[in-house]
Amino acid sequence: MTIYGEHVSEFRPRPGAAALLLVSSSAVILSAFASSLFLSLGEFFALRSWGSSSWFIHAPLARQPLISAAALTPFDLPLSLLLSAALLGLTLLLFYFAPIERSLATRLGFDTAMLAVIATGVLPQAMELILPLTMRTGLGARVPVAALTLVAISIFFVVRIERRIVETLQNLFTVETPMERARLWLLRLPAPFLALLALAMANRDFTFASACAVTLVVTLLENLAHRPRDHYQELLRPQMREAAATLPVFALATLALSIWMFGGPATRIEPRALVMKADRTRLEPVSRLEIAKRKATVKPEGPEEEKKIEINWSKRP
Image (cartoon, rainbow, N blue to C red):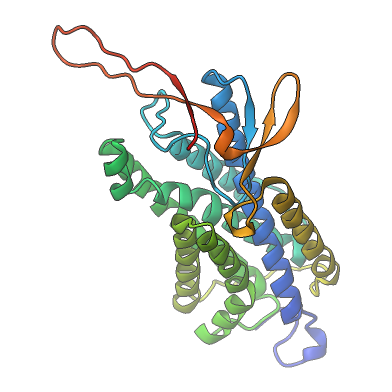
C-alpha cells in the first residue's frame, strides 16, 4: 500500500510513463558523458605527469583512450583500472552522503545517474582488462583478478542502487508483484541503455556494449527476484513535469555539442581530441596526436645489469 492510498486514484499524484522515461533517460545519457569526461581528465593529468607537452581531452562516449591499456602506473596496475576504482569510490561517496532534495525528480534522477556512472564508467574499463585481453597485452595475472573484483563490486552496487530506486517509487506505485516492478523497470532503463549499446556497437566498442547489456540483465533480475522493503517517505512534486520538460533538452544539447566537437566512428566524423598547449587550444584528429606511453621497468633476477625500458614517444596509429 502506498502513502497516497491504494484505491483512491485522485489522492495518488504520480508521474506518467513519459515523465519516467524522459527523466531516467536524460540522467543516464548525462551520466555517461560525466563518467567519460572523468576518465578523460584522468588520462589528461597522467599524460602531463608522464612528460607530455600537451594536455588532451578525448571524446565522451567514444571511449578511445589515448594511453594504451598496457601503460602501468607505479602500482603495477593499468591506469584505466585505477581511474575506474577512483570513479567508483567517488560515486559511492555521493550515493551515500550527498544531500538530496525530497522531490521525486531529484531522487530518481540522482540515483539513476549514480547507477549509470558505474555502468558506463566503471564496468567497461574493468571488463576490458579481464583475462583474454590481459594475456594479449602481457599485464600479468594480478590484473584480471583486480579487474574481476572491481566488476563484482560494481554489479553489487548497481543492484543496490536499483533497489533504492524501487523503494522510492513504491511510494507512488504498487510494486507488490514482479510484473509490476518489471513494468516500472521497462519504463526507466531499457531505452537509454539500449541507445548507448547501439552507439557502442557502431563505434565497435564491444566492451561498453557488454557493460550496458550486463546492467540491463542484473537490474531486471533484481526487480523480478526481490520485493523492496517498506520505505515510505514524502516526495515533493511527484509528477515531475518541470524535469521531464527540461532535462531532455539539456541531454540532447550535450550530445549535439559532443558530436560537433569530438566526432566518432558512429557519426562518420573523424575522432578528435581537445588539445591544450601553452600557446594554443584546438581540436585535432586523434590519429595525429603524439602520446607518451609509459612502459614498465624490467628488473631481471641475478647479477646481470638492470635493464630498463625508457619512456618513449610514439604516434597513435
